[in-house]
Length: 440
Image (tube, rainbow, N blue to C red; front, side):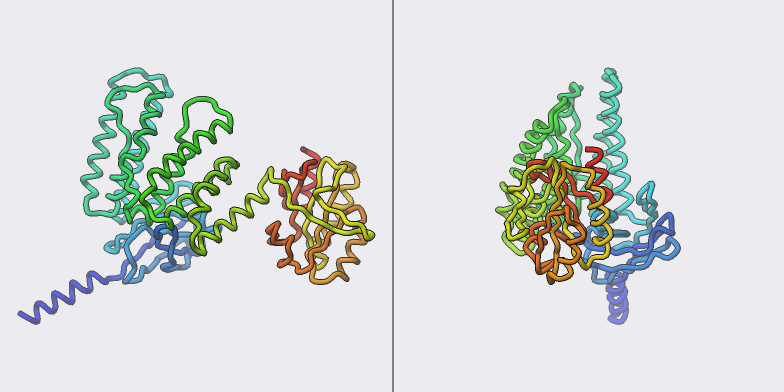
């Protein structure tokens, strides 16, 4: 009897610690060579395993001690753009297929099939409700049929998903289902009013995924009135949305809150909503930057704000014939070109002479060329070939003050300024500079 119990115990232990895999295919096969799996954590992620993709086929062997959670599979760079997420519960193998047109499909995984089919069905029904309004349909029976089906699908998946990780996402995604037949404006207002009813911000499963981040991004930037608005009016609504978000995050830890606000700031900054991004930065992020990671984020934001389109370019000083000059006091041009270069940079020695020649046709443009150098000898020789440029030198090269202020990562780097020294473009090459000036 003891021997039988021992065998059963060993068998159970083996089952618990069994290694699982995530495997499948990528298409077109020639475009994919590698795959990295990370486990998401609240506000961060940790490396788990990687593998090669051979002829479009891959297999990730998940370590036996790997923690269950949302896993991010990265297949190209930049990593924050080329990825998809899967639920790994530590109990099943996952088989999938990914292609660049249709995304990811699952063939073996209760968790992921449940998750994907639920969101597909819910999204499809909500799109049908949107179509009901946009098509001008006024048939009450049609609307009630849709809302009844939406409610049935939600309840069905909540019941079917009990005991799974997918359950956390499904119950927190419960949609707004109106009891009556509202006008389109009332429907939109209802969706916004009840947006947070089911969301569980303190759920550790949701925090260790991209779900809450996506939800907050969606609310902040798309929960807008159904009317024509100026950009300023849009940002005023977005800022009010952020205030609402902040109320909902009252009991969330600072570290995760920092992650969420940085995601909101990133979206606002990328969309050119400077008023909104500045409010997020000054009102929330700066107060949350209590550790090294937070301070690093603040540093990155300050660089962005200093160099974003519309910002006044940081001042640059130089000397010529024993006289002192500065960008801030330079006058007489409609546009100013800043170019950061080096006399030892082969690309620079090709592009700057070409730019110098082309700009002879632009009498309302002045150029300030900042040489990032370790010594002056070679710089002096090369600047003599570019007499129409104003020349400043930044000794210390990448560690120089100007390289840091302007966040220079490569040479040449260009900035185009307007007559008030505001940054209006960041061309990639000398040809892009000329094209911008010709078409502005």
